Amino acid sequence: MAITYEIDEERSIVMTTVTGRLTDAELMAHKEALLADPRFSAGMKELSDIRGIEDLDVTPQGIMAAASFDSQNNAELATHRLGLLVPTDLVFGMARMYEMRTEGNTGGVKVFRNEEEAMLWLGASD
Image 1: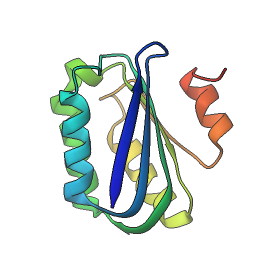
Image 2: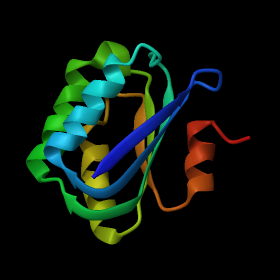
Image 3: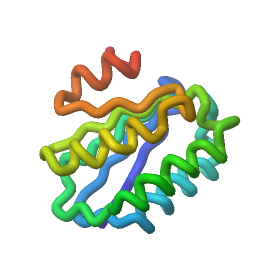
Image 4: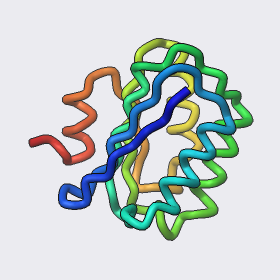
């Protein structure tokens, strides 16, 4: 598994990429690392491109833990918008579960199959 991200401070956007296998622990580690990154600030937008995932090993409990993390860190995430770009129906379903669990905890989470639509929703298109 690899979760990598780049922060474009000028555009106020985080570009996250997930490849390989993704587990609950890796998902939480990414969330914690991003929040601890001094370049990350409240109100940033994030596009998480999950199309390179080969094995989704995230459980419903992991989704609930991620949503709980967002709720506990509401001060930093209340205006954070996250677009999830997904490849398959299974990943789409898990991402939608996260979207529903985070309603009211963040500036918004939305699942997409199309990168252009995701960037438009984030307000980050060129």
